[in-house]
Amino acid sequence: MDEQIVDVAILGAGPAGSVAAHELGKSGLSVVLIESGDTTDVHCIESFPQSGAPLAESTGLLSAICSAAYAPAQSMTLHWRAQAEVRDFGNAGPLLVHRRELHHALLSQARSASPATTVVKARVRKVQRVGELSIIETDTGRVKARLTLEARGRVEARRMKKPAGTHQRHALVALPFSVRCRSGVAAMSLEALPEAWVWLAHTGDGEAHGAIFQNASMLAGQSLQQRVSYGTSCIQNTRCLNQSTEALRFHTPTAADFIALDDPVINDACFAIGDAALARNPVASHGLVHALRSGVQAAAAVRTVLSAQHQSDAAFAFLRQKHSDAYRAALTATARAYTESRFNTAFWQCYASMKEPPVAPTFPMSQVLTLTEPLAQAPVLDGDFIHWAPAIALPLKQDYAVQIGPLAAAEIASACQPAAALPELAARLQRFHNRKIVADVFDALLAGGALSPV
Ligand SMILES: Cc1cc2nc3c(=O)[nH]c(=O)nc-3n(C[C@H](O)[C@H](O)[C@H](O)COP(=O)(O)OP(=O)(O)OC[C@H]3O[C@@H](n4cnc5c(N)ncnc54)[C@H](O)[C@@H]3O)c2cc1C
Figure (cartoon, rainbow, N blue to C red):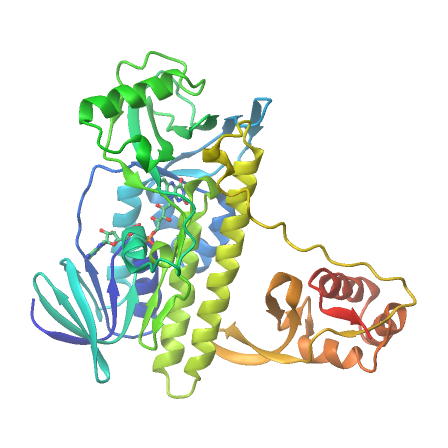
């Protein structure tokens, strides 16, 4: 590989790296995407929730995702809580996507987004910052870049983790499996076992793919034969596969634990994205949507940092805010799923120490209220770039609002001065806005802890 100097080097062409490359290529920046292309025998199918479709559509990547998909799942059978449940998705089920085909489809979109995008098949060995450039050493040569996106997935997140600097509950490992089956209907099932859980997807074409998730210690030191007999006995104890387990094929175990970096901004010229920043426990699902979203957000941060007219610190603050939002959402979803399981063993209690989110206080109508914190500045994505905008602190959500409904933070803040009872604060805004909009604004302020008694 010849030595190249590019605007952005993206390390890893999974969904996060490819989406970021696609976005940056469209912006006219020169991009090199470095992918080792290791084809390991990992899990084969992933679910992509319909809630991710608008984001995929807005980036122009929905049809690429659909091209890698089987039919949407029609239902999900849960043997999770005390009572079995069946969720019927109608036409709105998650897409069952072929993981490797999805990666190829997104990479192909990234490649064709711009002639200034190159894809290099190489293994990244080392990254170092020298002056204004990052130097990326690979097994086929060197790349120099102004900025780097670290997108090498959850293995990289584990490597970067510092003992006190990550949030790792336990070493969860997935043991993927495949089996030929009789079902011609695309459907999923999820089942809790005392020391594991099992996810299974029937693709609708006579194949089923799934994984058993358990603590790494359950598989440690096992030979292939022992692993097969352990996996087979787990599946025999489930109700998700209603047939003989003879034809089960097991694949290479893969890490699946919940890991989050404290800070996705590794330094002023390198940001972690996708699983490399925050790898969700797959029970919380949405890993693909998170990868897509973080690729888009990182591209906006890169454009902002590389543009002379914009402030880099807004981009860094934006990435940190989005990372902490995603971390809280993933932790809440995982803790909820684990708490709802019908078992109460140590395996299921590992998220039990999580605090419940604080409940918003209620105030009598006559209580005089004011903003809990003065109007602040928060980073906001506006078009292609990130900038600072006036924002109201929502301390209970550890967030800021630059806008609530159609109303900007500055207008809301000015209506909250001087301090007054809720009906008076609302009346000030109702001079210019309808009752429903104003009611929604105050609901959001109260739920976020933005108003306090004087
Ligand atoms: C068992 C399991 C089941 C899952 N099921 C679902 C699901 O059903 N739905 C869902 O939404 N999510 C699921 N996920 C999560 C989903 O797979 C990830 O969130 C998503 O793939 C993250 O994308 P990424 O681009 O950040 O990382 P990856 O997809 O991990 O991509 C990283 C890329 O970096 C490359 N790379 C690594 N090291 C190097 C190197 N040194 N040099 C060059 N390239 C390198 C890799 O080859 C890879 O292509 C599951 C995860 C697991 C483990």
